[in-house]
Every structure is written in structure tokens, then in C-alpha cells.
Image (cartoon, rainbow, N blue to C red; front, top):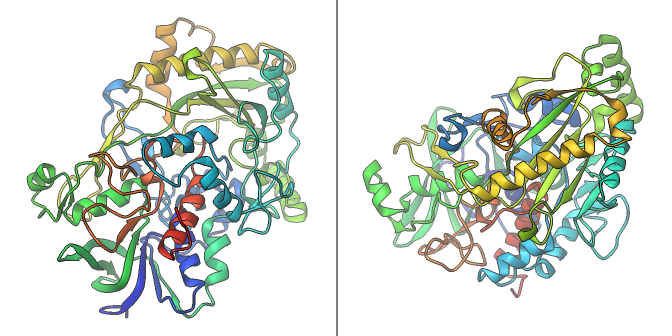
Amino acid sequence: MLDKVTFDYIVIGAGTSGCVVASRLSENPNNKVLLIEAGGKDSSFWLKIPVGYGKTIADPKVNWCYETEENPSLNGRRIFWPRGKVLGGSGSINGLMYIRGQAEDYDGWRDLGNKGWSYKDVLPYFKKSEDQENGEDTWHGVGGPVTVTNLADNNPLYDALIGSAQAVGIKRNEDFNGLEQSGAGYYQGTIKNGMRVSAATAYLKPALQRENLTITTRSQVEKLIINNGQVDGVRFFKNSQYMTVYANKEVILSGGTINSPHLLMLSGIGDEDELKKIGVGVKVNLPGVGKNLQDHYGGQITWKCNQPITLNDVMMSKWRQMKEGLKWLALRKGPLAVPAGQAGLFTQILEESKRPDIQFLFQSFSGGYYEDGLYKFSGFANFMCPIRPKSRGEIKLKSSNPKDTPLLMPNYFSHEYDRSVLLGGFKLAREIANKSPLKKFILSEHLPGKDINTDDEILDYFRMNGGCVSHQVGTCKMGSDKMAVVDSKLRVYGIRKLRVADASIMPTEISGNTNAACLMIGEKAADFIMNKSAN
């Protein structure tokens, strides 16, 4: 029983950033730390094997399985949002891709008034978290908790994509997280010995023996206990009963881009007019809570392959499933041991962008989005998305009942910039596919198909067939303007003893996958809390 127990620090949410914060704080034996997670333990086999994301990405046992409201710019479509509900959070069910974004992304955060968040400032934290297979250099670290490795598969489609990109003038890039992001190359993954590396396996597992760290799972936080302008504790629901725990020093909210603003609003921290309409008593008027929602929305071209070398072919054959399964068991290699994107590129579509504005995630399989599964034919795909979208959405309370999921309104594809980048990216993807060596593997274009050619047809295809890659950020943004929720040390404005540390604090979307940045945010937050950082 935890009811009425007091800790020094309470961390809400065992996602990527939350695991990092809880682990680092508990390194000091004098800190009594509680980590609260709504989901269960990360014990499933499918959470261990890299290809398991195909099973867990729509599994309600480990996944919140959110769905957005109708999107006006997508002809009213609702979009499925997978979010991890398990130790490790979304880092336990994601595509395992390790991308940090561009240096300019973080310099942009600094320029928005966030001292200490330039690329020069955050690079040491990226390196601190990393154990890079290729060794230590200016941009990479070794010996950190998170293993980052090269592709453990040699499918000829990967080199074909890179070769065809070079044929249209895109240079090869050996390290998207190095000197520059621009170019075509292989992705690295958070994989060690053929097994997934999440923040739970990398940070929490080594900390389990610490007596000063308590972890409670299947514990849904419903409210922050606020008195006299400070957070004193947390109320949560576990085993059919409510419990209240208290924090001597701080509460760190790491629920993620959806659940962090949701809990703040349920606790009376948000836009006072909106809270009053729902019937929530206002504790702090912070109109930016839930606003500034950003995500990577895009779409894919899928091709039928003229050779049986795709993951689709493996999954359609019991014999090949067994063969690749044995290969993974014996060597920890092959298509079962790779991230969701194996090769790809970053390049500039619009002249005004000045730097790469689109990402291609090339995949040696093809199918629908998330819950739809693989196609029943040999095929591969290229997913593309604008990496710094200008469309903005928001998250609102549906009601004052904590059990009601919030209203998710991403407002995808509403800005002309996003449409222009994606349109140009689509044309580039077709141009690349029409060049050797990739061309020789293509039997035909499956979707959208050869009959979709005009700009309007292509944009309609994206409206009706596009999807997100679940890189939601920004709903508790860091800054100093009137819509900021946290300051540059992640302290929530207007209330004491409360910080937010997760993707929601990003003022703008980063140029690529977000998990690596969440590791960095967790590391930096822990240093702020322990007063190790001068920034």
C-alpha cells in the first residue's frame, strides 16, 4: 500500500523521459523516488524483439490506442494515434529509429528565449545517454545506457534506394546524427544483440535493485494535489481504490504530449475560460496548456516488388517465418532485428527552407497504417513527411472525468507549407523510383497508382490515405511568451514544485523521430532537478 506515503520526488509516467528522470534521481541514495505508470510491465516477448512493433502498435494491452477528432483538412478523417501504455512508454512500442534532428532545431529553441537549449547545450546529453556502436567522436558517446547500432540486415532494396537517390543528385550520408543531416543513407536503431532497447530496459532495469526507487504500475494518476500555489502530491487509482502520495521536493510530469496537458487541465492548470466551461476549478490560468500541438503527418508510396525479398514475403510463408525466426534466435540478425525504417533520406524540397524539410522512411515491407497490417503480396514502401510542419492543433478536455480521454485535434494538413513540402516530396519519391538501381525491383506502383498525377489528385490522395508517425510534441511548450507552459528549466509557470519533462515541452517539432530527443530531455531535466546544470 502506498496510500499517504511521502517521497522526495514523484515522477508521473514511465515513458522515455520519465524513465530517465526516475533512474537518474534514484542514483542518489538519499533521494526517495516514486515512479507511477498507468500501464503494466514490459514483459511481453513482442516488446523485446524489434519487429514486434507490428504487433504492439495497435495492441490495447500496451497501447492507449487514441483516435483524433475529425480533421477538417483531411475530409473529416480521424487518425489513429498509438501511444505506449507500458513501462518504457512509446519507446517500448515504437519503430526503434534513432534520429536526433538538426542542430538548427535546438538553436531555434534557444532563439525563442530558452537559454541552455542550443545544440551545443544539448549535445552532451545526447552523448551521455548513448552507447554508439560506431564509437565515440564529436557527435557520439559510448558507455551510455542506450545502445545505438547499425542495421542488422542486408536486403538489396536498401542500397537500391540510396543508389537511386544519388542518381537524382542526393549525396550519401553515413550518419544522419553527425555533422549534417542532409543526404541518403541507413538508419540506426535502439537495438542491442537483436533486442529492443527502450528507456525501461536501459535505465529502469539497472535501477530496480535500488531500495530508494519505487515503481507502481497499472496506476492511473487522476489529479495533482495543489495547495497554496504548490503541488504537494498526487492522487491515483490502482487495484479498484484511490491512493494519495506526497512529494517533499518535486513532482515531475512525464505523461507525454497527450497525458501531460490532460492531467494539468484536470488539476486546474490551463486556460481558465475553457476549464470553467468544463466545470474544473481553476488553480493557475495558463492558456498555453494543450495548445501548440504539432506532429509529422505524411503519406507513402507502395510498390509491388518483382522479387520475393520483402518482409511481406517472409510473413506470407510459414517456412520463411521459421527460417528468419531461427536466424534471429541464432544470430540476432535479419529482417526481424531492424527498425521500422531501414534506409531513407533528408533533403530540401522548398527553396525557402534553406535546409532539409522532408524525411523519407524507406521500408522493406508494405501495408496500411498501424492497425491495418501488411499487404498479401511482395511489396515495399517509402513514407515521407514534412519534418517541420506549420499546421498547429490542440488538446482539450472532453469532460472533468479523468477516465474520459481528451479531445485530440491535430489540425493536420491545414497549412499550405505542409502541403507544398509533401507534394514536392512525393514527386521526388517517384523520380527516385524511376532510376536504377531501385527501378529494377519494381513491378508496379500499387498506391496511389499510375493514374494519380496532377497536384490536386496527389494532395487528395494524401488527405484520404495519409497518416502520422506519432511524433506529437508541443502541448506544454517551453518558452517565455504568454502561451508558454514551462520555463527553460521545465518548471511550470505559476506553481511551485512542478516540472514537465517529455516531448510536450518542445516549442517546435524537431526534424525527425522524437525518441532520442526525449532521452535528452530526461537527462537534462534530471540535471536541472539535481542542480548539476548551470544553464
